[in-house]
Each structure stands twice: as structure tokens, then as C-alpha cells.
Length: 288
Ligand SMILES: Nc1nc2c(c(=O)[nH]1)N[C@@H](CN(C=O)c1ccc(C(=O)N[C@@H](CCC(=O)O)C(=O)O)cc1)CN2
Image 1 (cartoon, rainbow, N blue to C red):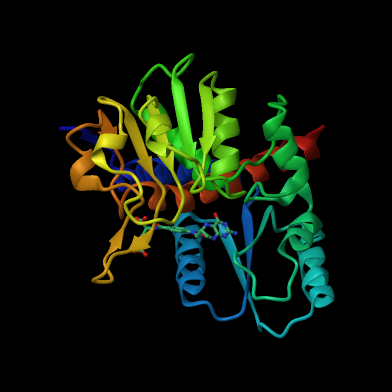
Image 2: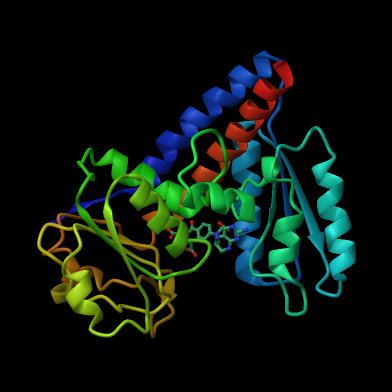
């Protein structure tokens, strides 16, 4: 029986650390500020944004939520991003994804000041991650949260095999870069990969982020592997489930994340962590 990686608990511990850092910053006269821009009325996005706002307020972070109609033009949206780029009380800016049809998400992300790119989606920060550049820069929150979960297991990763199934800009690609930067041997697969199970069975660490319910069965997993399920799918009864068949996988894996309560809670906790990082880094810049 695998260790169940408790994302809720790890997120709670991370939030406690973040709150202490916020307190320390406030003692120096700095308040971390987060601006979240949401466009349109996607119900799931509205819930995520509300949860981000609540968590930020709870941790003492200044939180601004800008709700915009789906009819907004690209130029108007870029102007609002630019407003926050020049607002000294805001250290992190994010645009909730997905944007409604007709808006160019990549152009909007590229308009965010890279120093305030709290999601780590700006091409400059993506490039830094892929080049494994030293120094401070934000990275995508979900894979960073997964790295925190892996660290909590105290497992030696260097030289071991990782397989990432999924190639999105939010999870798959940055996840592969982070595992490579941790000196793992990384394979990236996706839903079109032929004989996927032959590849997943080689993984010491298997990260699955495809949005395909129960794509990974028990037999597709190497015995003792660490299995990270980023899926957030609905089963035939509308119940939240993952890309991994948890009941079949739990007897084969060495450690596994549940859905819900695994990776999901780490995304928002890492966003809060990264907002505080950006504030600290801007304070360091300011004092030089
Ligand atoms: N600009 C961004 N947009 C999106 C991101 C992102 O990181 N930046 N990620 C996702 C949505 N997301 C945060 O924005 C997010 C998704 C899921 C969870 C979470 O806590 N999930 C829970 C289950 C929640 C439920 O019951 O529905 C879990 O897995 O336990 C948090 C944040 C896309 N957009």
C-alpha cells in the first residue's frame, strides 16, 4: 500500500511559512500585493479566483481581483495589465486561464512585467527555467508545488527516471524542466504517444497531467514509483477524479497523490509563496 501524499497538509504547512514571511515583511514596512484578473464568467475560474483571494487575505497579502466582461477588447485588457505593472503596491499579477475566445492569452501574458509574473508564464521566465539559469525568477505554480511535494518525501531524485505525461505550458512542459533541473532523466509523453504504458512503466516518478480520466491503470505503473496525478476530471457521476485509476494504482505505487486533496491545494499555496517571493525580491532590488 502506497504512502498517500497529503497535498492539503503540505499546503497548510507551506501557507504557515508564507504567513510568517508576510509578517516579517510587514515589520519592514512592505506588504505583498497580488492582482488577479478574471475575464468572462467561467464558473470554475470564478471559484479558483475566489479561493486565491480568500487565501491571500487570510495570509495578510493585499489582494485585488479585477473582474472584466468577456466583451473586453485585447487593447483594453493590455491597458489594465499595464496599470498593475506600474502599481508599486502590486508584486504579482496573474490573468486567470482560460481567457474567452477572441483574446490572445499569450500576448496578455507577455505584457505582464516579468518581475511581477507570479504565474511564471512569461516567455522570459519560461526561458530562464528551461535554461536552468541561476538567480531569482518565478515559475509555474503547479509544478513548483509538485517539487515541494516530492521534497517532502525526502527521496533521492538525481539520476532516477521521470516520465511526464502531458505537455501543457501550465504543467507538463515546466514540470519536465524542473525534474531535469533536479538531475532526473526525463521523458515527456502525451495522449498521442504510442505504447504509452511501456514508457510509464519505466518511471520512478510519474507525473500525469492530460485531462483524460483514468488514462493510467495500475499495470502502467512501476512497482514502488512515486505517482503524481494532476488530473481534475469528472467521472460518470460528476465526482472529481484524476488521470490515474487511484484504486488500482495505490497497491503498486510507493507514494501517490489523491484527487482531490493532492496537487490541487498546492497550486494556490505555491501562488501565495511566489507572491511573497516577488515582494522580497523587489525589496532586495530596491535596497541595492
Ligand atoms: N492563471 C492561471 N490559470 C490557471 C491555473 C494557474 O495556475 N494559473 N491553474 C488552473 C486552475 N487553478 C488555479 O488557477 C486551480 C485548480 C485546482 C485547484 C484545486 O485546489 N483543486 C482541488 C479540487 C477543487 C474542486 O473540488 O473542484 C484539488 O485538486 O484538490 C486549485 C487551483 C487553471 N487555470
